[in-house]
Length: 148
Image 1 (cartoon, rainbow, N blue to C red):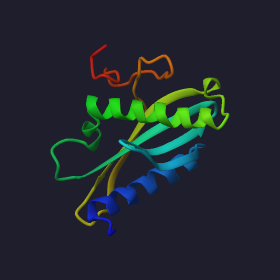
Image 2: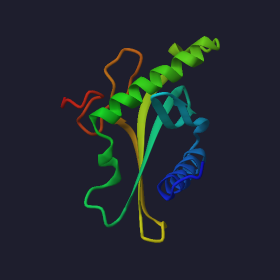
Image 3: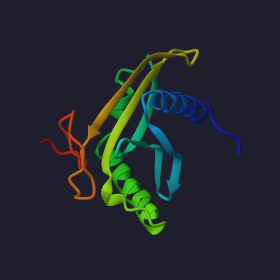
Image 4: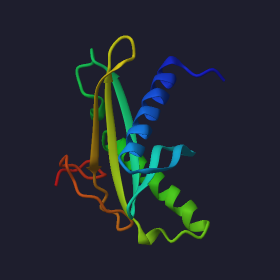
C-alpha cells in the first residue's frame, strides 16, 4: 500500500523527533507501535522513565500550532495505548512498576517545501491521573481534558 504525502511527511518529522531525542539521551524503544485501535508515535526510555511522545506537524499557514491537535480524545487514546504497551512489556516479564511514566509532545511547523520552520518539544505535555502513570502538568489539562 502506497503511503500518502501526509503520512510520508509525518514519518519524516517522527524520524527528526526520534533523532533529536537520541541526541538528548533518550533510548528509542518503539516507533509507530500499534495495537488496534491504538498507535504510539515514539516510546523511549530516559533514566528511569518510559516516555510516550506524540508527534504533530502542521504547515505554517495553519492558524493553530500543531500541538493543539492533541485534544482530550487523543490524550485518552494515548493513555490507553500506553497502558496496552506496558501490559505487553509485563507479559514479557518486564517489571514496569519500577519506571516513571510520562507523556510528551513534539510539535513541528513546516513551510510549503516541507522544511521545518519550528520544532518544539514538551516534556510532561499532559498528565494522567491513572495510578499506573505519573507526569507533571505543563498545560493545565489532564488526560480526560479537564482543567486542574
